[in-house]
Each structure stands twice: as structure tokens, then as C-alpha cells.
Image 1: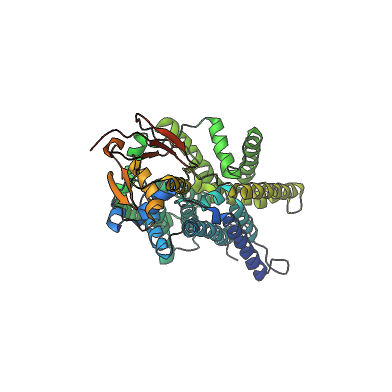
Image 2: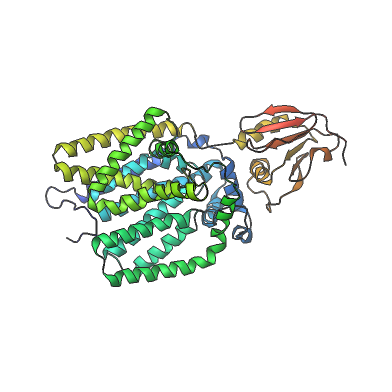
Length: 496
């Protein structure tokens, strides 16, 4: 039986798992993934980043594809969400988009890992990704991260198949080009992420002794990918400029403790924290990496798609500009799941055999890890830990207090676009203007350079997202709402 490079032999014959049992088990993993991702879905709202996402997705197509769109990311995710929104604009339907991509990532890992590593590794990796607290968290955020995980799995798979010689025809070439292009156009970190697939391919080629002619063929394919990406350079050059301008305060230069805390978030989510969980994370990942690296067939995967992205992000943050954040490296999540699966079924049996002490210890470790991640994931899905400002609740509270003729003034245009989604509805007509005023249902809604004093004899509600500087007005009553802060000017200065 032909085995691809790095594949673990799957038992055959009377003792092997029947195909129907395998398919049933895979279906069960997908049901588990879907069930966990719809927990608490009906209580969802769209927070700041998501509201910008849906706003960008609803603007005219020429604006969406304009490289000067005021956003650091290429347009692929917005483009696909644009057509998703044609079928509905409720909060639940919108959040189902990342749920779809997240379940698709689990299905993709099951399929690709089965083809490369066999049934046991595929099922174990699929379960770990299905219950991964960080994957569950991003499955409830209408942003690019779940789609990026999905695309990275396929970019890794098509390149592996090509290097191993299992698939070198037109379908494989199209798969490589399409998956890599889509990764690059899905997020500002797309080119960064796809570079580690190249590292994986070269490590595997060196380890397996890939013929020079195949390596040249692979290089020609990627020359074509690079040529195609020249057209997308305006999208890719925007992010470094924004980084150097310091527009992302949540990106940091990480200390060792910051690294451990981020890895804790990736392994156990945001529902738990503390020194004990950081210690558990360090222990778990150390054991996994040591076990996986002991197995030579796992080394390219571990070194290139787990260790290298984390190390590169730390080095870039210290040597150039801060980029460390869980979002920057979340694309490694499927490969962490796969690394754990390979460590359990590869290294454990390599050391002690299928019935040895090492193998039994590996299975006990796996059981404890699954239990811990599942408990953390379920707790996390009930807390909405990733959600920031609850603009929906804020708008509802302000609406209850509005009187005819009042003015809502939201100084920053981005904040205004977010408020507008819930004030005017998803079918609002927006040109992403930086300033303006709209008269709606007896009230004015203004943003940009307008000042409260321009509205004579009216109560002015001055709104801001919590990290914006406060607007200075002479006399006001401060009203704190659930998701944002409003200053209510009760004594409006005379203006025009």
C-alpha cells in the first residue's frame, strides 16, 4: 500500500477499523464541533470589530475592493460575507458565517490528516480542534480567523501532497495556487502565515529527499503565485505602515510571561486564568513538543507550523515592531491539534510500543487534556469573552432616553459606523464618510468634525467607544451604559 511522506501506517486486514465505523466516528466529531459552536448563539451581538466587518461587507463593491479602504486587511473575507448577508442580516445569521468556517476547518482536518497520517491521528486531531477553546471563541466572532484556519489546512495539505509525490497533476497545482492566494488575501497576516507552509514544504522535501526536478516544479508554481500576488501589493503594503504608525495598541513586545499567557489562551481559552493554568500550559506544550520532535516524521510539522510562527512573531516584536497577540498566530491552532495527535499516536508507541507504559501514559494525558479543554470551552462559550463594546445594548438604552429633537454625536467615524448598524439598520446607505449628520425619526445623528455646540437648544448625547479620548464639553451629565459611555450635555451652548 502506498504511503505518503510522513504518513503513519493504518492497520489493515481483520483487525482494522471498518470504513463505515470510521465515517461514523468522523460524522460524530463534526456533530460535536457544530453542537459546541451553537452554544449560546441566540444571545449573540456584534461588537466593534464585527460591526466594522459587516459595514465594509455592505458597501458598494468598488469601495470594498479599493486598497485605500480604511482597514488593514485584504478584502476576501468581506467579499464572501457580502454574499452571505444576501440571505439574512440577523445577528445569529451573521455569526453563523464564522461557525460555518470553523466546522469546515474541523472537517478539513479530518479529511487531510486521514489521507496523510491515518485514521487515529485524524480523529484525535479532529476532536482536539472541535473542542479547542480558542477555535470555539473565534467561531463566534465575525472576523477572518476561522476562515483563515480552514484555508491554512488546505494550503498545508496540497503542498504536502505535491512534495510527497502523491498528487502532482493540474488539480494539485490549482489547489496550491488557490489555497495560498486565498490565505494571503484573507488577513493582513496572510503572507506571513503562508510563508510557514513554505518552510514546512522545504523541511519535508529535505527530510524525504525530494527529487530536484519536483523541487524545481514546486518553485515554478510559487513563482506563479508570487506573480499573481503583485496585483495585491497595495493591500499588503498598507499593514506595515499602520503598524509603524502604532495604530494597534493591543499588539505588544512580549515578555516570557506574555508568551505563556498567550499559549494558555490558545490551549485553554479565556475562561480560565491564573498561575496554575499557565504552569499546566507550559507542562503540556513541553511534553507535546518533546514527544512530537522525537518522531522524525512529525518534525517538519512541529518546527514549521507551530514553533516557527511563534518564534518569528516574538522576534519581529522585539527587533522591529510589536505584533504579538493571539490573533496574529491563531492560524497555528489546527496544527497544534495535529501535533498533539501525532505526539500521542506516534511518540508514545515509538517509545513503548502499542501496549507499553509510554503509550498508556499518552492516552491518559490525551483524556485529561480533552476533558480540560472541553470544560473550558463550554464555560467560555457562555461568557462571550471575546466580545468588547456591546453597541446593540448601548443603542437600545439610549433610544429609551431620547426625546424628539435630541442629537446623538459620535465623534469618531468608525464608532459612528458601528452605531449606525443598530440605529438605522443593516440596509443603511453609507459611503464611509468621515463626517456628516443624518436626520432620522426626529433626531439628528452626527459624526466627525461637528461639535455639540452646533446644535442650538437641544440635548446632545456625545458617544465614544471606551478607548477613545473623552470629548471636553462645559456642562454635562455622564451616563454609563452597558457597552459604551455617553456624555449628555444638558446645557448646550448657543450655536448656529
